[in-house]
Image (tube, rainbow, N blue to C red; front, side, top):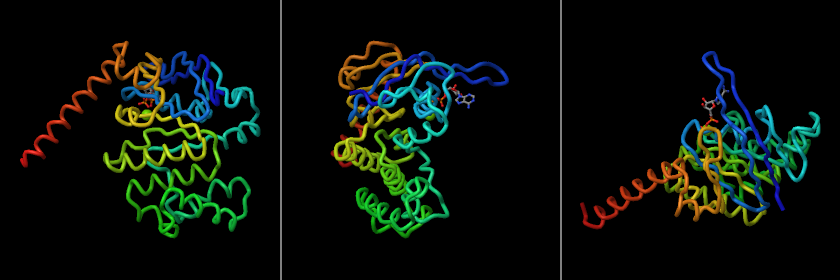
Length: 264
Ligand SMILES: Nc1ncnc2c1ncn2[C@@H]1O[C@H](COP(=O)(O)OP(=O)(O)O)[C@@H](O)[C@H]1O
Ligand SMILES: [Mg+2]
């Protein structure tokens, strides 16, 4: 069953100098329970695309179906309810600095009308899920980047979404912390059956956890398919260009390994 379907999506911005076509005629669908990757160079249109998926950015044209409902046709109230099914996590975490970790996680529940004590109870459960129960009373400023992202994930879960959109969620983190966040996202995907759309410029992240991937280039999907197939046999110039970087990255890492084992 497809949980999200996008048809002929387009979004442009008028700037002083020119009209920027950030997303041009994009169509794809994502099945329930998938981890779907979107990769592309900076400026390819990834963030605009992801913001169009919950209508944070209103598309100029096209349709976004979530569970068969076209978000473009909903009124304000219906859209607000539909949006609760879609959580987002970002590179900069977007936590509320004056609120404790516990109250950050409980925030979407409070907004949805849950009492403060019940919100805190549920928040504690989700903090436990992400392994941060002991930080419940800390404030965001007292946490590391990886811990902040785990709080953001707990907050995303507290809204009980069907879909989580991740926009460069690991891009500010070191490789090791990136891995712990990817493991956590993978676990959430399996345990809660939440569909994940993961936007990143890091090939490795996609390779690690995405079932399928779309390569974005100049606001269009250059190619799309099973991650392994696309990575092993990129067909378009856009995909090849991205993957060449990955190969040289791997080669560099290989060199480091050798240096380490030689005791240099
Ligand atoms: N609010 C905006 N106003 C004007 N141009 C924008 C705006 N948002 C994005 N753009 C432009 O749209 C293009 C795609 O941007 P973006 O979606 O952020 O790409 P990515 O996330 O892949 O780096 C870029 O050329 C960017 O400058
Ligand atoms: Mg972006």
